[in-house]
Image (cartoon, rainbow, N blue to C red):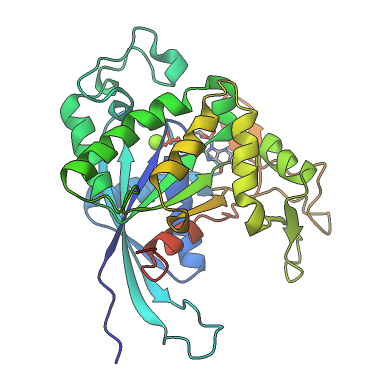
Length: 329
Ligand SMILES: Nc1nc2c(ncn2[C@@H]2O[C@H](COP(=O)(O)OP(=O)(O)O)[C@@H](O)[C@H]2O)c(=O)[nH]1
Ligand SMILES: [Mg+2]
């Protein structure tokens, strides 16, 4: 009889408003569809998931979160790794712990105070809870260091407008590196972690068009809707192309830094969407001229989701990170 794998820990990390909460809200849906159970580790985590998943079903996005979220969920399912190969290991029960690292304080670590005009960084200036403290920063970085895998969400749409990704990223990464140095965790020049670099909002017109124009797309012949699928070999190209068109230009440096600090066998690129594409119910297939699943609200300026939720690549990065068999030694 096969014994259960030890629990793998994954930290979910990304700049404010890159889509972490929406990612989590759709994870419950994506996981259930793939027969993976997602369970909160306490009632705060469960209530958060219930409320945000419910909002998605109401075709609304979760509200912004400005407080420090110290929440975790456990993903339970069966790993079929290599099932298609001869002599494959038997499917085995798998348990993955997902920690949300979501704090404005991540940006301003080491006791720095947020600048006066926070608006350009995506937080309300009047929010007293949003500033972050040295303790919260250190605590969250410590938790990231303690994970085997890091799910790093990158929002190309936000970056195009704000252009502060590198500033945000390097602040956290340098601290992670320092702690790993102190603890003797480096493996040669590399951090020991796996990192899934995940471009969010794949359904956004600007993101999908880039992939389409560069010929990075295909579709699954078994999919009756013929929704576009990113060719896995092009996932890194899409990420790097999107970085190059971002407003600050500094975002390109994030990619270089990832490749400097993480072993290439421990990096994988994905493009995900929490909500998926819209398909006109009367059309036979997905249509390139009308696929946006987001629309303005009729009575307010809150964005609404237009059609059914079809999460794309939401569970996949977690399963890759949670798989201990591929990490380079
Ligand atoms: N088009 C699209 N927009 C998204 C998606 N996920 C999030 N968003 C948008 O990004 C905003 C911020 O997302 P949120 O999850 O709150 O980011 P967080 O601050 O990282 O938790 C949402 O209000 C949506 O407008 C997605 O999959 N597709
Ligand atoms: Mg949030």
